[in-house]
Amino acid sequence: MLKLILVRHGQSQWNLENRFTGWWDVDLTDKGVEEAMAAGALMQDKGVLPTRAFTSLQTRAIKTLHLALGVCNRLWIPETKDWRLNERHYGGLTGLNKQETREKHGDEQVHIWRRSFDVPPPPMEPGSKYDPGADPRYEGIDVPYTESLKHTIERVLPYWESDILPVLASGETVIISAHGNSLRALVKHLSQISDEDITGLEIPTGQPIIYDFDDNMVPSERYYLKDS
Ligand SMILES: O=C(O)[C@H](O)COP(=O)(O)O
Image (cartoon, rainbow, N blue to C red; front, side, top):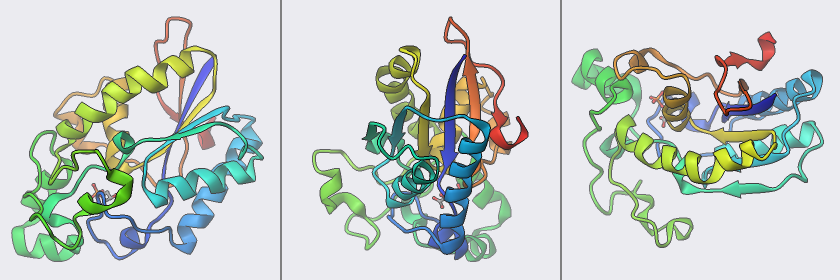
């Protein structure tokens, strides 16, 4: 049985501060480091050991991957980093406190920005201090100014199909270390969740999620590794 492991990065500094993060590069907190290491220990305990890794270009996901792989003695496996696994771009909300934004715009509007399928947050002003456009890691990439979940799916899914699925199908145990909304994009596809129901899906930090794939590359229902 082929296994796909999805893990959202451990708690980040801006998760702790309750700020919209998106493409801004923040580090893990101490708790985030612990969550990442616990994910590695769980993979070791359950004997679910990745042989190939994919992650984003963002520090919190890369470090989570490395900490988890370190604990289960798999730092040596090949890994690929790609911007298409980055977090959804939070546009003009980047850097703002989520609670203060609710107080200003109302719970409903903030829920729409955070969880709707196709309503993007207001775009980031070009040259904003949180615009990562000039960051060398994004050279040659058309960095967006905002993204809805739909936009995120439009970059995550082609990458899944072209680069990750063939590796999984070749017999590798694949781990993807990514972000709340880039993983929601993938889970929506793999679990065939409707545009309406996706608004209710939350992905916890540092908790490995598993899909088993049959010989026809049809995924099982997803489950948490801790529950297996
Ligand atoms: O980018 C962020 O702020 C978080 O990674 C995800 O935030 P959300 O749960 O508000 O979508």
